[in-house]
Length: 195
Image (cartoon, rainbow, N blue to C red; front, side):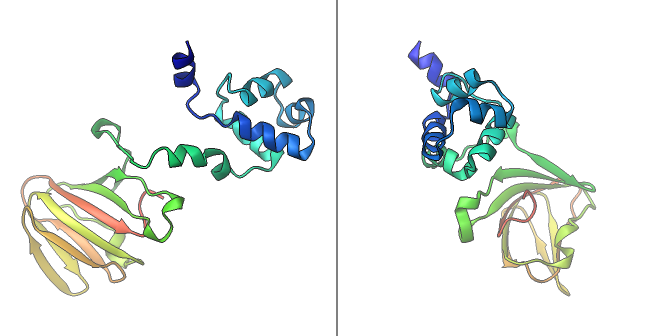
């Protein structure tokens, strides 16, 4: 039964909520009224008996003036490795180009923050966003297909397995010059696309 309960309530921040509430001298009733929830619910959350809905958690954090980073710091500490399953990637489309997220940057990463994604471009398609340039650096590896990389006024032909790295501050565009979908592994720092 204990194991089942731990699975149901994976983030045990009830103690933090109670400690902050008591330090501020608030009663359960005061916090519950200000957050718009029942006193019983606040008590159960503080004892890690239930996991609150996100809007309830945000309301409690607001009433207690708690930084969400403070509430979730153990969760981050306990998860030094991030796994994104192939079928669970976030993706965005810009015109005909699809970007599938491979790593999610976090605020905690600070100056080391990076994002990576799989770029999928149909034949004759091309990227658009980098055509103006932006801060940071990029690294790309062609996984499938043929590409032409345009950087300022220069052009580089890329085949499967080729990699390219560059300062992202100058205009740059990746063009699919083959007859199959182009797939490329791409890393950008600082993060640009999924933030």
